Image (cartoon, rainbow, N blue to C red; front, side):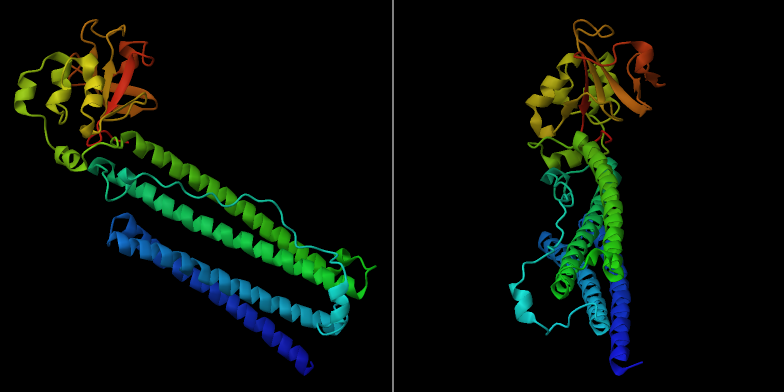
Length: 370
């Protein structure tokens, strides 16, 4: 083995060691990020500190990718030098002026690819300085962790896409050098070029797999986000007021001065007295007293209040009807009311009119479960 060949082997060995180091660094960065992300998701530190961490975290993620890209460059350099010695590639210093005048025969491949999907940013009402009830805090933590995992996966996908573009550009440059030496040569049939093409195909497979993981994780984040948004208070809600209603009961005098279905619901959790009027007016009162953050929807949720309007076939034609949603199991709504105060019953066993313009659900942000 000549001294040049020995040096080439040393260069390849150094590139391999650097590549292994970059992967160990990537694992260490990921482990640190996972721990810190969990702390940030729980609201640790000031807002300024959290912003500084997020900016620094993005730089940490780039370190390992930069090292791995550099190790690839070292390997490519070793291969180019080896190829030049074997006569398959012109030495860098030969006919430089000639190559500058030639038309480039190959351009870096630029495949149209969609940029990594960025996780949507929620409104302040779902951030630690907003309001999320204790009953939904676990759901919020799950959403925060899944969102952090998604961001990590998106970063890894971006590194793969950048690596792919760099290698495609390097391959195009290699083809140009070969074409400069012999314009009639079909460089695509050369073993070394074919090996590089195979490398690109492998990276394409990795990109496709990473994109699939991103899509799956994005769907999970979106699903958790939708659940949180259903029980999030309206934008004009008083977060401090809502927090004070958690784990408390309705005033005793309210229960003593209400009747039938309203009295039953008032006894289940803290209902503000201004809302506890005739059943069919509950949604109107919720809109009028918006600082309580109560919202109205069509999806049944545990801890929500079912409102049947006066036109409903099972409701009182003058006052309507309200019931408390105990559970939702496989799409079946189980309720209690003044007629069934102790054992939950399926709404579908009471009426066939389980949806439509006369059926609504009220979500109380301090009590309803997302």
